Amino acid sequence: MKKNALPLSERKQLVPPISNPFHQLYYFLNLPSATLALVTAIIRATEVTKKFRDFTAVDHISFEVEHGQIFAFLGPNGAGKTTTIKMLTTLLHPTSGTIEIDGHDPVAHQSEARKSFGIVFQDPSVDDELTAWENMEIHGVLYGLEKKLRRDRIEQLLSIVELSDRKNDLMREFSGGMKRRLEIARGLLHHPKILFLDEPTIGLDPQTRNHMWEYVMALNKSEGITVFLTTHYMEEADRVADTIAVIDHGKIVAHGTSAELQQRTQTKSLEEAFLSLTGHQIRDEQLGTADQFRMRMRNMRR
Amino acid sequence: MLSTIYILWLRQLKRFVRSRARVIGSLGQPILFLFALGFGLGPMFQKSGGGNYIQFLAPGVICMAILFTSVFTGIEIIWDRQFGFLKETLVAPVSRMNIMLGRTLGGATVATIQGLIVFLIALIAGFRPESVFSVALALPIMFLIALLFTAFGTGIASVMDDFHGFQLVMNFLVMPLFFLSGALFPLDGLPPLVAIITRIDPLTYGVDAMRGVFIGASHLGMLTDLSVLSLWTLLCLFIGSYLFSRIEV
Image (cartoon, rainbow over all chains, first blue to last red; front, side):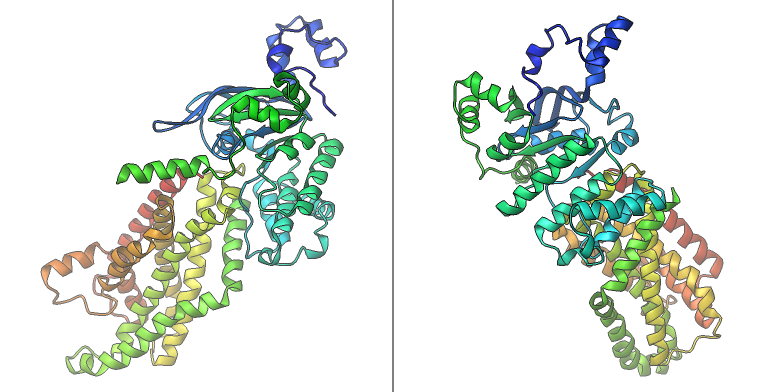
């Protein structure tokens, strides 16, 4: 499971393993090693910064996510996780720095970038007054799926998330966990290469949470889909992710597998590692970045 | 992409059909205006030589129903933003222009249907249009008015963060649009200032055009009515889609 034994910064300096066919090809073509990462990384952020007026939400972060990886952004609320996801998913433009999503720049090639990922937002984003099927149908049409293919795929995905028998029920009759499951199914409808999950388990009970991660991990294995998730739950990051990036105050403070983070900080759990890296516990009670910004705006007006 | 526009249009229609309480609720005001004003002010209007007040009032009240419904469906974007569905559409690989068009056409269709329902109620209240075919002529005008104000509502919703400003919009924009449109009073013999304001109000031309087709009494002339109405609609669509394209979620 844990595929990347070394943090990115150290990995770059190593001679690439010759066993990977891509790497062999690159050696054969004698291309500079910088282009190597172009092939292996499906998400790449370089020195990405997002400022809201004088407030820096995301501060010069750089990272790469490889094909088929489960990558977790771990950090307290307000650390810049959602802002980063919004930039990766074309909803916000970075103030500076560059992003590549499956080889596309989300600013310059918005449409291509958008087709390559599915997203489950932090808050529910279904239409409550439509049925589960209709929500899926709208998504399929927006992503330009042809009718027959669309219907088959919807059936298939609804059965994977065990909602087939509720497909004609209005979404407002669904529980929080069921809505989440539908959103995951919807995010996968257009065969994306990357699935973004922004705090996907917030507000769900432990059992549903467990269930959801099982789905996600199974999908990651069966469809080879890359998963980018944000969370402020240690145990989730620990259990699910291949690679964890710890983010705090808009900066990535550490990056690696859970074991590596513990090793580096000489600690025995991810929780302790986090404490050692950031100097504080994960603060659940803090406001999100957007809320912080709104508060600042409100104060400025006064 | 027509399919995008179509599916979002369909969504508005489905939501409309499923929210019976809202449909009936929004009919309350037009019914009240029609019956209370129609029968209350009717005798006075007749005495002063204005003729049958219901005949005069009904096109105005139909316009009112369209105005309120369309502004409201436009403003529903705030709802979608708060309950998240807007994000789902904004992150899809389709242009904002198409999203805006689909929603706006859907909202306008809903408002037109609402206008038709009020027309039927007006018939019960004693409204008698010149001929049965006038409804067919009125439909495109109703749709034009609906389109104008749905786009207007969309534009407003695009710059509003939440519902706090809703009351402001209702009291300082929508109500004046209605009351200063000549929906309730004739346009001739007005004080100069009021006359000028009514000429700025786009709904004036909608109400006047509706009177033109229903009772054959257009004050400003059908050509003026339709061209001003169309210009206003284009302007609102343009500004509305511009503001919508700048929404950040």
